[in-house]
Length: 192
Image (cartoon, rainbow, N blue to C red; front, side, top):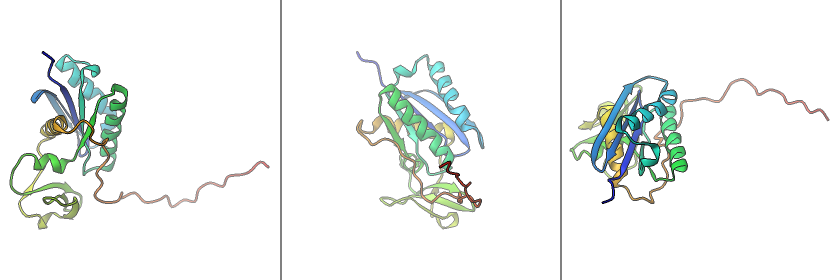
């Protein structure tokens, strides 16, 4: 009998670093840490700790699920880059799962909603493109679960996705807040 597939799911799209490992549809290990910054330094050690706690290695994984947002731009890029790098090195499928999709998968009535700065929210009404709107205008908001539960949902949805799903890409609902530098670039001198 073949062993059940191992799916690793993780997310850094908000002020957390979260991961879960599933064997088939059973949660083997899940863990999350609240953090405003430092996800880039903490993600890979956290994933290694998850694997160690389960007594498995990277090569035992059959699939990876990664949170693609919406949320913190830098956090999303951290997870997606890590997932794509792992997929290439391990030669396994990696599936991007949005937080809104994970919320919707819990099959509750309401509007999947991720809080955003300045009393705004990222929402996705059924069969629509995600959008940014004022939180007060969202009827029956469904908020994200706790980070460890979100990582578990990401892993679960990734384990069910088609193997030929496209590689994960960040879900950006709005443009970056970053502004171009105000300083003029340095003058390049030509020796000729």
